Image 1: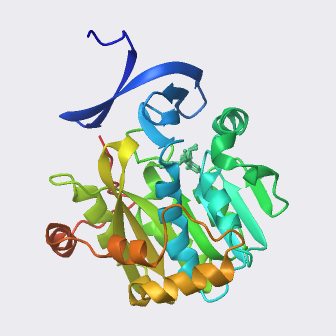
Image 2: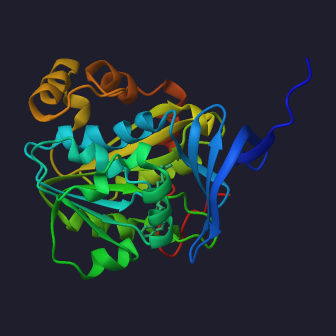
Image 3: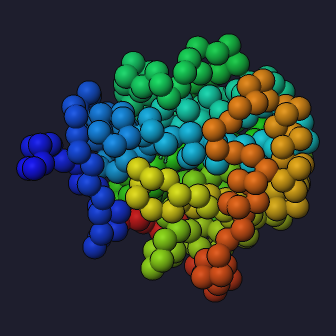
Length: 305
Ligand code: SAM
C-alpha cells in the first residue's frame, strides 16, 4: 500500500541528523521581528510551535517538557509566592506555575509579542487560559534588559528560551553574566530552572557547558533529563538553587508536596518516582558533566548549530 502524499517537515536536530514529521496543515506562519514562527498540525503530535525551524513544543507531549521544567523548582522552594518566566512563548510554562496555590504573581517576559499573540490565538490547548489568569503579568521585551533594570525579586525564575542560535534573540542569555543576574534577582532561598539542551550521545557539549557555567554562580546545581518524543531526543534541564537541593527530596517528599500544594493534583508526568528517575543521570552523562571545563561567558558565548 503506497503512503499518502503527506507534506513533511524536516527538523535537523544536529548538523548530521534529523527528525521528520508528516504535516496535516500549517495553521500560521510569519517572519517576526526576531524569528520565523510556524504553527503546524502534525499527524503524530497534533499542533506544534516551530521557531526558526526548530520544534519548541507539541500538543501531544508538551506536558512532559513543561512539567519537568517547572515543578522541580517550585517543589524545592519552601513557600514560593512570586515567579518569573523568561521566554515562555506558548504560555504552558505559566500554566504549570499557576497550578501552585501559593503563587500570587507570575510575570512572563517574552521578547516576541507576535509569537505570543499567535500562540494565544491558535494554541489554547497549551496555555489553557493562563494568559487570562489575574496572577499573570505579560511583558514583551528582552528579558536580560528587563532583569538589568528591575528591582523586583522572585522566588522562582524559569528560563524557557529558544536555543542560542547564531544571531538568534537568546544568544547572550546562556552566559555566566546572565546567570549571575538571574541569581541576584532571586529571593534568599530562590530557585531557577531552565531547559539546557539535548542529552543524547555525542551531543552533550552544550548541556555540560551550561551546567559547568551554572556551578560558577549557584551553590546548588542539579542537572536532570527526560525524553521529549517530538524533539526525537532526550532533553536536559537544570536547577540552580540558593537553597534546597532537589536531589535530597525523596519520592515520598515530592508526592506529599504535590498533594499539599497543587490545586489540581493530577499531573500527567511529574511525581515522586519521575523526580527520582529524571535526576538519576546515567554514567556517560555524569562523566561529561564532570569533565566539562567550558564556562560560557558574554565574551565567549556558546552557539548551537
Ligand atoms: N524551548 C521551549 C520549548 O521548547 O517549549 C521554548 C519555549 S518558548 C517558545 C521560547 C521563547 O523565548 C520564544 O517565544 C522567544 O520569543 C523567547 N525569547 C527568545 N529570546 C528572548 C529574549 N532575549 N528575551 C525574552 N524572550 C526571548
